[in-house]
Length: 347
Image 1 (cartoon, rainbow, N blue to C red):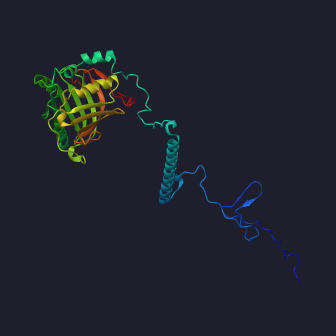
Image 2: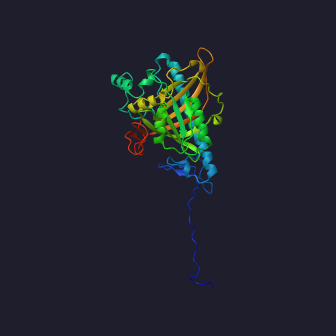
């Protein structure tokens, strides 16, 4: 006999069809990409997988996969830019003279805030100040520059070579070793020997890192930070050593009152009657408050083309302070001092 109440009938449960990954369902009840185990529903091809709008390549954990996706992303952006550029070019060719003017690209220089101290070169007040300042005798041809170049105590090889190469760039420049003398003792000796400039090159860890430029006998004195120094041997495809001809001087972007003073300080280092036979140019280019120095030789290939060849050395300056009179670290009066919070000042 069968035992009563011991066996329960198993009810069949209607299982819902399982949805695989990639399946989606719209609001109107139509199923897209749905597959059932029994095969009752129609099979449809799944759509191509796309990243969500908030997805970032940096979220990919695998390094190789992340790099591959990033390179694909850059390639797609490059293609889009090329297509847009070609489209604009075709539109401009189709419009001809009626084409709109080209857009000016945004750069750091044209997006900077206008400096109120920018002066007009034709301003009468500026012309009067330049005619009566410490450098007026050079530009009037009454005084010829004579420069003494020295270093800090116990200079190393690169600093000594840097000074020697500066002496070949600046005419009538002489290199003397410091021998432990203080600048307050060197300046009277320079004045007695008719030197018009004292240039002191400082070094740190055997690399030039500072420059003190003192105009004699009445100042001013400028202190610069020196960086990115490259000697002639370190410059690729450099030309032969410079000759003794007086070079031409180019000053770019010295537009403010402080910039005029610094520009005239550099210009007075060189004689004001350049010898064009030597075809040598010394360039001081001011950009974002950094002064880039380059020394080139040029040659006329034809009536329209000119070739240039860098001679070296090259370096970058940044003004730290401008002091009235000769060098005096204790009691000197400063016209301008660089501050960390105001490092973006223009001149």
